[in-house]
Length: 107
Image (tube, rainbow, N blue to C red; front, top):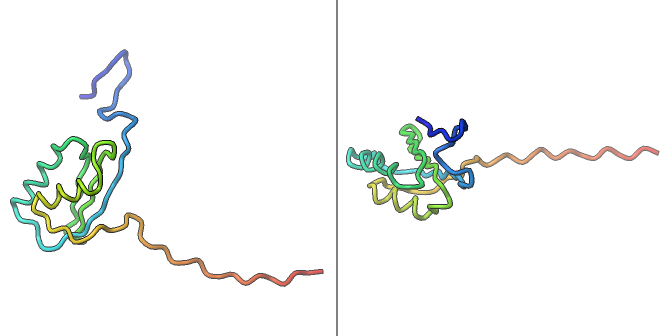
């Protein structure tokens, strides 16, 4: 239920929040204890969403950058028992555009 003030719906998060996502690749299979700890990680003030992709072995965390930083999010994942291997870019590398030869100038 969204709190209502003077007939206007107010969101749960402030509009001044700086929302960031970070993507990590993990190794191994998360244990039951690690999965439980990841579920409890949502209780940390500033963590908005956690998405685990077991096929690609990645975890994506959406967080409030005014409350948390990347190193803190990384430490929270490690303390939950997840074997984080590396941070991945959210946007995959783009192939360079093919070079276009200039047409000769006409007189």
